[in-house]
Amino acid sequence: MAEERGASSTASLALAWGVVVIPAAWGVYNTILRAANLFTR
Image 1 (cartoon, rainbow, N blue to C red):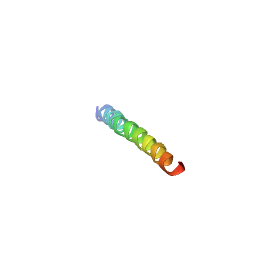
Image 2 (cartoon, rainbow, N blue to C red):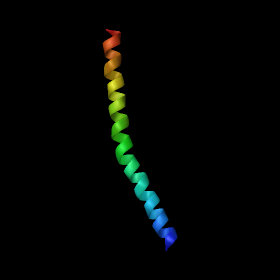
Image 3 (tube, one colour):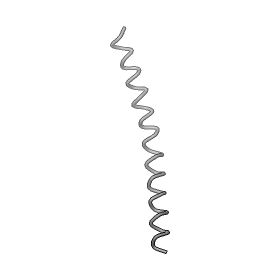
Image 4 (cartoon, one colour):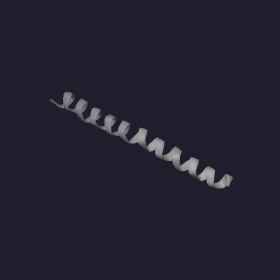
């Protein structure tokens, strides 16, 4: 039973990180693209 709980906890933790990291990475990517436009004009 402890192994099932550990696997579930690991999956929940991975999902939570994905929910946080994916939008943050998208925001950083868009910021870099917009900043690059400021310096190339």
